[in-house]
Image (cartoon, rainbow, N blue to C red; front, side, top):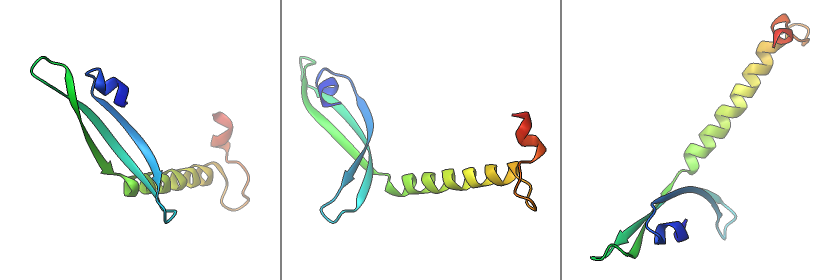
Length: 88
């Protein structure tokens, strides 16, 4: 991302870091080139936003959705596949 930004292209990426305490932290990062008077990239502006809570909520949502789909496809009494599961 830094190489592309140095060439004048704004870049965005999501990254994961692990601190010295072992805690994971997700970041939404935007790298923006800042040109000088001759339009050459002179500096880079980096803005990083902590999205750890968002990633955690997405993970929980995905797990709940997978559980709901599994329940919807199985008969609650027998645990066998429901007739709808065979039509997929």
